[in-house]
Length: 69
Image (cartoon, rainbow, N blue to C red):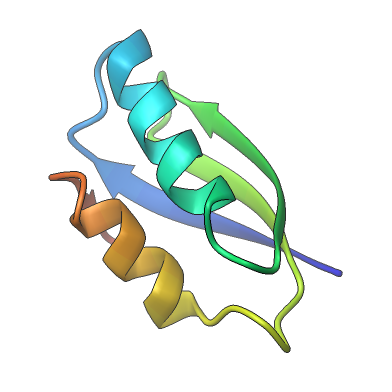
């Protein structure tokens, strides 16, 4: 398992937090998601052999948010 931090713009409330968390946890290989609204950071624990950064970026962007890093 690998820990990654994604920078996500546009998250402002509990609904945003839930949308991003749910989108990521539906991906095979994502084990843990912690969204920090105050910083815009999303900490993710992933199995890199099952899910790529591009997969996570697409899942978040499909919810209407911008991934910066």
